Image 1 (cartoon, rainbow, N blue to C red):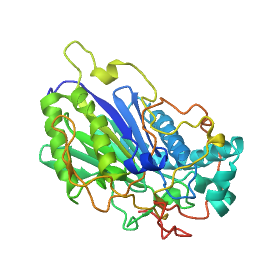
Image 2 (cartoon, rainbow, N blue to C red):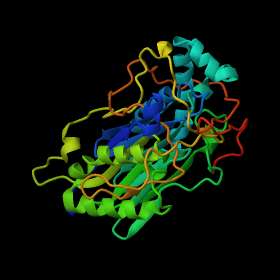
Image 3 (tube, rainbow, N blue to C red):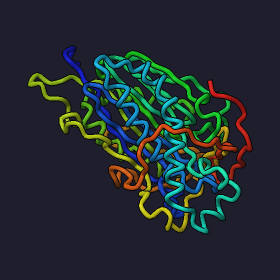
Image 4 (cartoon, rainbow, N blue to C red):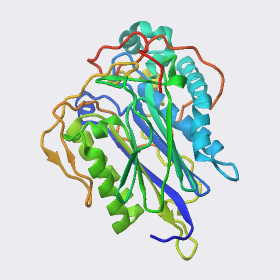
Length: 387
């Protein structure tokens, strides 16, 4: 790889899970990426699939929109500090998300069907919009991540693999921490690491990891990604993300969202890699159900995740065996116990058209943790604070 000037590049893909396709549920995942000079901010969110989370697809879309806006603001300094930005982000994002949820809820009254599914949760609108969130901020040679809930944030280079945030022992079975819980701010985890040109950073919702038969999928996938980036370059590898997400969504049954980040050299003529050459596009993609007309939407997806905590139901895998993807794509094998939660196909819109503007006003505190799956039980209160 060139040792000259480099810039961060990012691209993502999201696919509705096969179980959601069978039931008509929307894609509850969302993602977005934005360039800030030579830096990048990227976010993925996973709306809970349980019955009471009737607007989790809106909650995930709001989460990534606010994460991108606030993250870009924090990276706009003359000398951006990714680690400091990741630490500062949650304190601004959590109240902004709750305020945005309150505004959306006020503008779009629940339908009779939503009220029936939500039950007592209508006392705290935040529960209806529950979602997890992973935000990556990349500047200079540092990648910093802020995360609440499940999903993976991995970084790799030659002979190197790193989990970019500490684990959380409370995230077992179908339980997860969540933006909709009163402990959301305390439940965020952080991490940062230095990466050279050609390294691979992969953010993924839990539907991706759950589609593998092997518990050690991370090492194989990340090694393959680093090799593919070295052999074929970022644009070609990023172009395979859709097929990889589709394979996992079909095999595992759950919605799958992937975002790939890498440091790439600026070529000799001073042009940036393909994605950056497009200029300052704000949000490249938001993989979420369209919010327009949500109030009139009939069926709502069965929530699949419970915040921590909340419980989530486990989707039934659509197929068994090993699925292959993309050009020299990372191998993925089916899990017999993988959750199958369908969602709308991501990337169908560049931004939800009726999301409320970003605000920083405080919001009410949720009374219960969300559950991850439709069949899983949801705990009435968080089991503890995040690490």
